[in-house]
Length: 353
Image 1 (cartoon, rainbow, N blue to C red):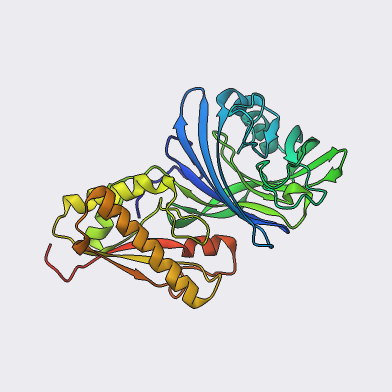
Image 2 (image 1 turned 90 degrees about the vertical axis):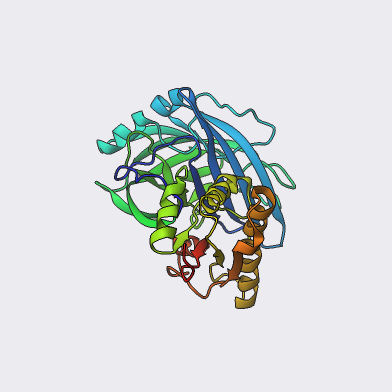
């Protein structure tokens, strides 16, 4: 696994290079989003957001956006912007994007309600293919929901997530919102990281006013440390490679994979006598044959990038796709499926090194 030193218990430090993956399960679409902090500065967090959204009729929407979350807003704002429009500016003063403000978080920890506004899209009418980013065949109307947020129960609850490819349980506050707009009443539930430094919203239940819509953070990858993977390959001959991302149901590498692949290349450069196999694994969505083919294509894409861009000798790298045949966790949950979609590097330890 490519990783950094372990984070302090329960804390996710928002630094340059951190990446988190969210899934949307909705009645009219499934979406996977990749959010990467391309720059963390004293003024705030500059995000890059890549998404792919699949609709029941087969329409697929892809897009990318950049947006800015200001430190001043993370301190005191009582407004959250839940969507982005390709025509809008990166900065939205007065709004947070992925977290409650620290002021609101303190009130939640004290067990007190707080006022909150949420900018969302009106999905109450049939607009055809449309994403939560204001893109698509027809445009949705922004709606400002006003109301309160309050603890749903005291204390914290466990929240499972992949942290650099390893299953951990973070502590989260379980909150309930009560909002109104001209469209009516909306009462979503939220799970928020129990961390005053960055109270990240880990899960929305009932997003977009649909009670069965869920937006959930499934994995968080910290800036990479190739030394961790190098030690694992040295001692156990196997390392799971965090930080490698593909488009949905595709072997196309996302640009956010570049740093992880460059780190793999640096390890192989330092050990010119190593040979290895890139193993691909998927979840169980789809047929066994399709998943095996997809896993083979994905590791082939990683190998090609290592060979073509980083000049790794192709004779040193084999590929093997196992599809869904070797799950690490159950495929019955979102987080389990995320755990099973992975790339591993397996060193040939039968040779002297």
